[in-house]
Length: 233
Image 1: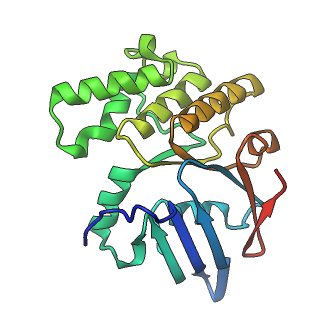
Image 2 (image 1 turned 90 degrees about the vertical axis):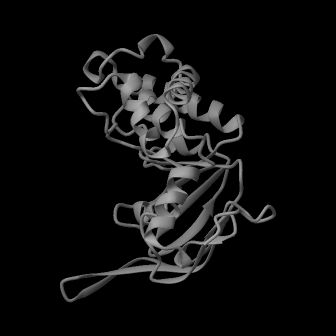
Image 3 (image 1 turned 180 degrees about the vertical axis):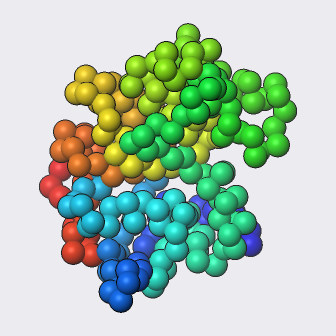
């Protein structure tokens, strides 16, 4: 399957997308008949109640799961038609992921943590070093490259996680509660960084429970009862 993008396609196009799973004898349907387009260059937040399908939608957009029904295209590529190997390739080439827990390896430095994202890419050591240095500089941590996670603040650890997510040059950054473990000041620092990355052309889609985060997005979506609505800006 060719991973060449369709130039005129939106970044994501969801048509009648549903996702169901079994829990004992009960069928749970967190997403039902979702129709949604997400454009390149947007900063979109997803809100909603616990269990409302936010993380499920993010997993579908990140090609970490497949819909139970409907179609989901990323840059014109129908994800359901891809093998697991091609989905892995697509994630590596086009998607970056950031989570509430920073998921840094405690024994590695900031530089080494960011470099782990490039290990599957088959790049030269020189190219990897250059990309890691550039990524850390973009998040304002060039002077913390040799520090390990325990030597960094929570905000700095999340910056390292963001640097790791963007080092491969993704088309979209998918973030699940990226400020959930941060105090207000650090939250605002990370939000400012995300806005800077977005102005540089990176599409950002973030799940959040924090209205202060959502209000800084271009579009605010709410997921509840299996459906999606657009909230006022």
